[in-house]
Structure formats: structure tokens, C-alpha cells
Length: 589
Image: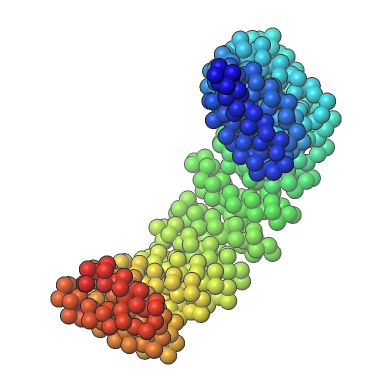
């Protein structure tokens, strides 16, 4: 019996071995995902002595299996006996951190970073730090790239002699022969700088930063720009000018557009990191150059940052800087040849009105908004319309209304249905800003026209739009303006338009209230129960179910019930089904 027990305890590992050697990748993947269950069954000691060595030896599988394994091992601390035994997880993860597939290596590094926190300082020096050294001096670039992500997690908790070794290893990797390794080092430079003592940031990190920022590979140089933000936040103000700014100026004028793009993309963060004085003297001219860059991607990235950059300028001379330096560049971008640049600018330019105030907005920004509302690119017009609320707060939307209308009408009739859909979604917002008289006079016909659009998504959005408008303008407005037009569509020869009437009634009944629903809408719905088209008839049943809760019990019993009972005996299966469902939901049986 004891022997049988012994065999039984070997069962999980035997099954795992079988499954991990199976030809079917899915089976192998499933068994890796069940690792924690197997480890629990084995107990902590056998997990350490049998399972982990087995896993370490079998690392030669498909990438997705290895990825799952790297992820599982990061949560294994308790399954090997807690923090004092956590170092047992290092061998398999070390092997995974050297494989060819980047995703697997990254996941292994993520798990190593996670379990490094669970090592005691002594274990870090005895087990973890040697692993980092081995990876950092590995023959293959794969292990060296993985090492870059591990320096910062062990550095703060080791002795000063080990710290010196770690700094030396990082320096070596920053000047590695392989661009992939230098790229990995550059991407972790900012993170490593944050855990270093300030003196070493000045003596070590700055020289590495300068070297990486002038690397021959642009993929390395652009990552150095990211590190620049972290380094600038660590240094005292007086050191920034001499230690960081020369490199940053050089990056902003780099020959590779990718590096300049990265500078533009990180501009707001750089601006906060270097402070107001340097912003005024250095970043303003740099930003002007990026807005005028010869590459459209760089101009678009810079245009995206216009509002943020202006908001973060020092308040005492913000207006003067914007008016003298930034606005002339913005004016040029409004008529840029590239639509992505114009679109990026249109999504933020309205925000300048709150910064510059009423007079400047009317004099300088309003002509730009009007030009953008007439732009041939629908995205530009849409971005302006979707951000109108900023301008409305400052100057009121009436200033724009004359140009706004043609732009809205054009978008509303655009050949691309997604453009039409987008403008519908802004309609309630516009209606609220323009007021009910203006809306009735100019935009009401548009909203009704969308109800008979040939694309269902537009008809659906138009129905939803009507409901939001009624919520904004009230039931009385609906009764006079919307309801008669909607009900008029019930006699349309096109059955799709007749169905739209029903969808509108579903949406409007609650907002319009019991009186309007009972007196005006219900008779139309009941009349449509005799429609020739089955789709219309079953939608009548669905509509009655929807508006039923709004009606009083008298109308339900005397008017709705007979119609639903008639539909429940219809020749069409669907009509019968929805009529019976309505009867049971409204409890009319």
C-alpha cells in the first residue's frame, strides 16, 4: 500500500512530463498554465527539487509555451516555500531571459523584477546579483539586453562594492557593440538614474546619456530623449544648463526625423522637467522649429502639444510668448499641406482661447477657426466642431455660427457615413450651445433627414440624437417640432422609414411623457399593426412592449391588449413571438 502511495505522489509530475513532451502545442500550453496546481500537489520541497530542475532542463519549446512559463514563475514564490527559497526560481527564469523571442525575454525580466523584491538583501547579493552579472556578460546579445532591465531593481539594496560593480556593468552595456543592447540600455537609463546617488548621476549617467544621445543608430538616440526627462527631474536647476541642455538642443535638431519626433512627443514632459527659465530661453525656439519641421510626422506631434505647451508656460509672460512666437507658427499650420498635421492642430487649437482670453480669441484665433471649418478635410472640420465648448466659454458660439452652419451641413451630408455618424454625436452638444431658436431654424431639418439615411447606423444614431434633444429642450418643444414629423413618416412608402418611426417612438416615449405618448404616438403604432410587411408588424409588438410602462392601465387594456392578441395569431412566426413576449412582459394575459 505504501508503495502505491509513493507512486501516487509521483503522478502529477509524470502527467506534466508526458504533457510537456506531447506533440500538441495546445496540450503543452495547458499543462504550463496548470503549473501552480501541480506545484501545490507536489508540495514546496518537491517543487524545488523536482519540478523546477525539470522545467529548467526543458526550455526549448514553442514561444507561446515559454511565454506562459515565464509568466507563471513570477507568481511562484509561495509555491517554493516563500521568500527564503525564492532564489530557486532564478535558474529557469535566467534561461528564459536568454531566449531569442523578445516577448518571452521581456516577460522573464518582468518576473525576475517581481521576485527580486522578495529576496532579502543578503540573498540579492548571493543569488540575484551574480545572475545579473552573468546575463550582462553573456555571449549572446539576448542575455545582455535582458540584464539592462534588472540593474535598477537590485541596485538600491546591495552593498557599495556591489553597487560599483553594477554601475560598471551598466557602463559597459551602454557602449556594447550590438545596437540592440545599446537600445535596451538607453531605454532603461532614466529608470537606472532614479535609483542612483546624485553624485553618480552627474559623474556616470550624464556621460552615458551624452554618448547614447549621439549614437550612430537613431533608434538608440531617440530612446536617450526619453531618458532625458527622468534625468532632468533628478538634477538641480543650476546643473541642467551645462549637463542636459546641450544634448537636448542637439536632439531637437537631429538629422533623423524619428529623434525629432520623440522630442516633439515628449515636449510637455521636458518642459516641466527643465523649469520656466530654460523653457523661455531654449524650449520656445526649439518648439518653433519643430512646428516648422520639414517632416509632417514631426509637425503633427508638435501641433498636438501646442495647447499643453502654452498652458505650462510661466504665467507672467505667457501671453506675450504665445502671441509673438507660437501663434505665427500655428497660423502657418492651419494651411499645412498635410491633413494629419491640420487634424492634430484642430484637435487642440480651440484650447488656446481659454488661455488667450476674449479679445485675442476674437482678433487672432477666430479667423483660424473659421478657416479650419472650411477645410477640405472632414477630420479637421470635425475636430473643430467637437471642441467648440472651449470657445463657447470664452466668446460664445454666435461668433462662429455663420461659418459653423455650412461646415455642419457639409459634414452632415458627407459621402463617408462615419463622418455623418460623428457629427450626429455632437448634435446635442451643439444644440445646447446654439439655443432652441437657432436650432429650429437651421438644424432641425438636418436631424430629420438623418432619420431616412440609407445606412442603418445613421438612422439609429439619429433616433438616439432626437431623444437627447428632447431631454435638452423639453416635451413641449418635442410635441410642436419633432413628434408631427416623426409620425408623418409612418405613411412613407419605404418600410425601413416606417420602421424608423417606431424606433423614434420607442426612444421618445419616456422623454415626452404619458400624455403625448397616449394621445399622439399610440394611435400611430396601433394603426401600423396592419402593415403589409412582417418586419414592421413585429416591430409594432416590440414598440408596444417598450412604451407600455409609459401608458396608463386603461389604454393598455382597451387599446394595446386587443392589438397584441391579434398579432399573437399572425401568420408570421416572428410577429407571433414578439407579440406573445410583449403580452407576458406587460402582464396582459
